[in-house]
Length: 153
Image 1 (cartoon, rainbow, N blue to C red):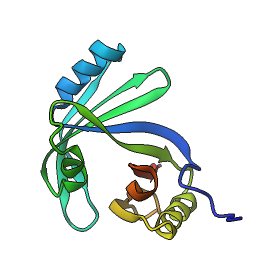
Image 2: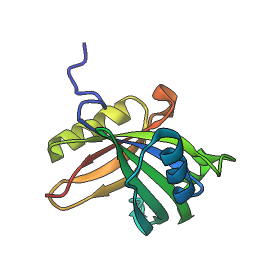
Image 3: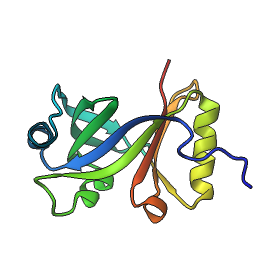
Image 4: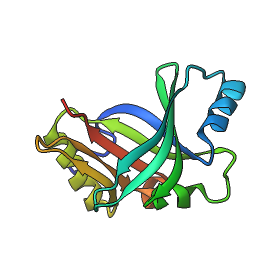
């Protein structure tokens, strides 16, 4: 039995969707699922970790205890989102599950676990204190990405 923690070991944080239009997708979630109170951030820069970045619009709202995140890729090195979206521009496409980890050590353990499972790490960020985040391309295992992050204190 493997004693290394799994990728689902952190605190569940949110469900991420990719869309061609964050405002339209938020309106659809509101009309179809009664999810309201959307907070929009436009023209957000996301550091990829290889010296490039992504420009995106992001919307977030709570559905009960679950945070829903909508990501609308605009430009830059946004293939992780845009390629996943495909032709489904007018809707939200499930993209990732996100987990918040409690320590830099837990974040590093999650990185090691992801790579041991054959996942490619994308959108990596890190800070001097060891906090940061990454997306693991776990589509070959689960059909979606996993985001792990340890918030900056």
